[in-house]
Image 1 (cartoon, rainbow, N blue to C red):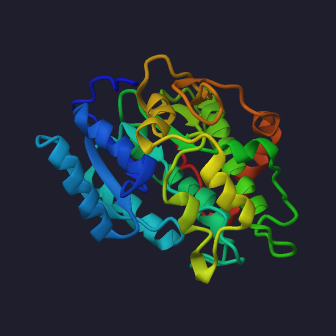
Image 2: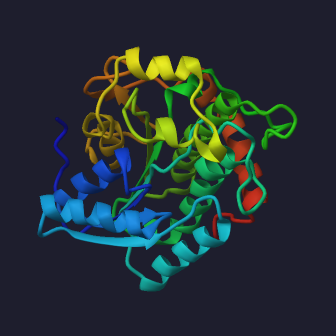
Image 3: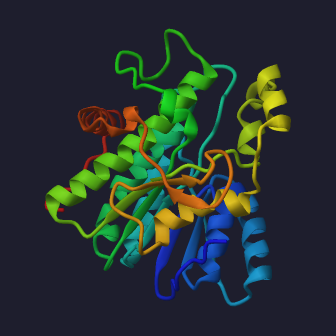
Length: 304
């Protein structure tokens, strides 16, 4: 099991921290001494997760704050509330997501739900929190992608999947977008001399409610292939599935633009993995970053 290095004195934000890999990441960071903010859409679920973390680590410092990544007003409010504290942010973990929503659904801002929640929301959060991240000594942004990104592409002509919606294709595009965001942030850090380290991860096939919550939105249900896959494909628990993300967020061996996942693709201990071809295209990453700035109305503050 990956041992998280000492995190005392550090402040970490973990999105989607009420369950699955997010809760495990928050728990391990808190256990290593970090002050952890559980950024969750439903505060009552966040409080339940906080209670579980405190039961395991009574001395942990854990706080619940509401964040709905499908609502840019919520993202701005969350970022502003942290900026108002003035405390440097050492670790941002972009973990939250929604998967394979059966019918095309829109966010509060009119974006396709998976693209909006999985990419545009985290993009706005990351850029909004850059002033706090860059005031920390050695800040990290760890972003969760997915193996589905390996076969995805960014459709700049239909980013919102308005013409031909496919749950799996929209999900794959959103997770490739996360990967490209990680790559572009690492490139910007290098170009501008920021001390920030941007790295990514994928969880392999990890058993979390992500597998069922998305497909059941709007009264849907997982398809036959998905249902069979849940039962026969090798899988692992969140304790193991969170480790690539924890490695990206905390390991001294993690590198800028590095990507980490299970040794045997679906399961196993963490190892560095090669970015898939779609994730290595820096021109696409730069174009997508610009598109995200225009869609969200959020850009890197002048002077950073």
